[in-house]
Image 1 (cartoon, rainbow, N blue to C red):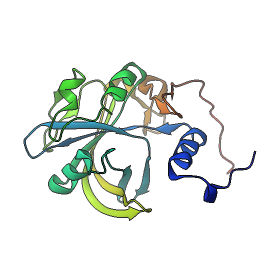
Image 2: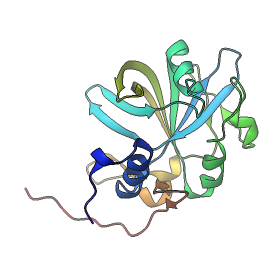
Image 3: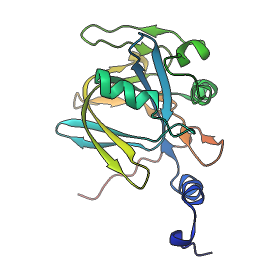
Image 4: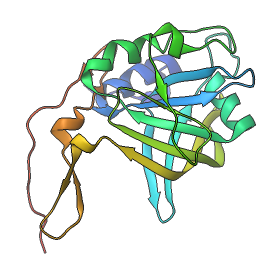
Length: 204
């Protein structure tokens, strides 16, 4: 089969891409609305883009009615956000947090989740995920025909559950990926969970 994307609708192209670019890590992003409520939403167009300085990117579209998503608006207004890496036990709540709510309503309450504050950052983390990255808005690029927002965040702090942190003989931090147990996004309603780990040394 050969697909010509010039002949496909944007919706068909989206569904094709989400089924062939797999698995995709999920950024579970917490922001704060101006009313003080916490917004929480998943994004699978997400990646690290730079390590000096450490910068992450999330791609934020619009709500079905064309309005800006709360995540984007909150980041632009308040400049802080927290990216979590959710584990397989939280997959149901990750999906539930994608529900379209009214502006300023909290997915934290909808999903029955709790948060915990951290010293030196204005936003808390969600209790449950084993990794949380505390980010400050860095810059934005608009992409595509519908002004998809590529939001870049500078990572200021990283919280790691002690259970996932190991030490190498050289004294470097090593993250035990099997204990992180991250979910990966596939097409449709599907996720993948962590499977076999292949450790293949790179050529010198």
